[in-house]
Figure 1 (cartoon, rainbow, N blue to C red):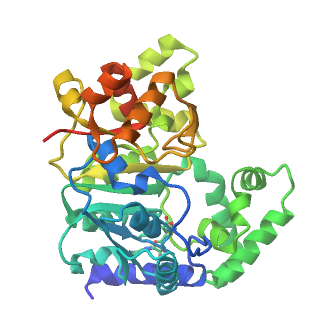
Figure 2 (cartoon, rainbow, N blue to C red):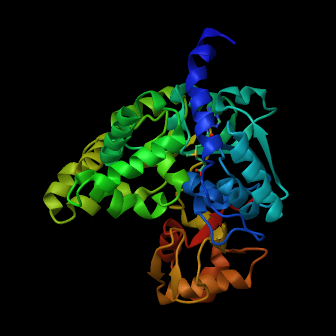
Length: 402
Ligand SMILES: C[S@@+](CC[C@H](N)C(=O)[O-])C[C@H]1O[C@@H](n2cnc3c(N)ncnc32)[C@H](O)[C@@H]1O
């Protein structure tokens, strides 16, 4: 073990012990594939988000880095049957649950390995897609972890990341420090930490800001001790400001594709009532616009985003010729279909226009193989503008011909 590894070791051991005590997430194990979808776990929508088009190949290698009890790994496996998924984690207890979870739901294209993010160089080959959600901020050296992952990403591949945001977690951070103070030399006894935290909340007045925040925002999930421990008695957590996030991304050597919750980062959401001010704010450079959103909306508790290893294509579908020859299919990440009122890829209830409904119906008639945009346009009377809009709304997925 070199000096760098030795310096990280105590933190890594403490984090492992937390998740061996309280494996996370504590989702129940089912005897069937998990319900619903998350478009961030479906390769065609991930690829479409990052490039504008469906991938030519679904036989991808996927790494679920810091997979915990395997909730995401199980979805990744079931939603992408042509893919091969590998979940890695520090916690043996979490991995045991992940393995049992996937055995029960008969996810056969997934395996697990007891391995730190820092040691992914021990894995053979490269990955087309890496999912690393809720992990980097628990590493003693997040940048080293991200760089290790980046070194295993194939050119043209994508990483989805999620880290905590400092402003929105301010009250959590105060309670974390309060629990640690009261625990004193019992810090690291996570069951004691949960007990102390629950006692502290119980003793605070209903008007107390920390208590109010807990009750309004988190208490439902924090009924589970695993969630409470993950939130309040963690031995290692770095909460990111926008500037820290920018630096992390710059140093990763990868390219920022975009936030995977883009609606949150639209200035219209906050400044739409004043068009002149909005226009002025829109003129700011990209990262200053994000900084402004993060300052004006203290409710933001995390950052989630995609990074890419270039080169990778970008399709904008502005050329009619290219669009007409593209293959088109309905995005399967929707619920309630066939109906004009559906849950879209983000689980938002939306009402389809008559032409959108018609296009989706026409797409279904041709699956598989998918029809071309030209065929759908001829069949439905939709315009190319309608098709482009449906693509940006993720109602349909496009694939270039050839
Ligand atoms: C908050 S949980 C997130 C689990 C899962 N990604 C999810 O979103 O449901 C964090 C997980 O990261 C794992 N972890 C932390 N540091 C790690 C490291 N250096 N290498 C691998 N896994 C790590 C922990 O053991 C834990 O299971």
